Image (cartoon, rainbow, N blue to C red):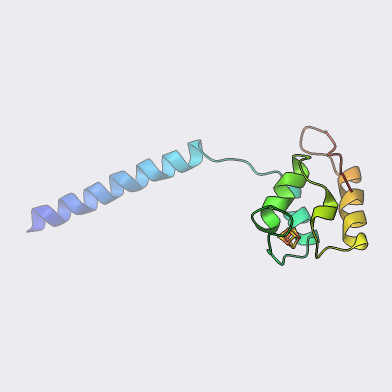
Length: 101
Ligand code: SF4
């Protein structure tokens, strides 16, 4: 019985080390502007923009694949705030994202 417990603990530790290593190797860095854009969207997560929620819309905006007017609950102030933010805030490579109103 003690052998089984020792084997289970050893196997758990080995798997924990493997998962920790895989997590650090496979980590994907996120555009730091993503959360700022999400925060500027209405966060209704209604999907009216054709994206899977506000995070999906923010990702589409950063890929230049979405018009800001696709967000139906969003108003003109929101669109102007996001456009101004992206005009002033480049990505980590120094590139600016073009916004479509
Ligand atoms: S339409 Fe606007 S509020 Fe609705 S999910 Fe898209 S970005 Fe979010």
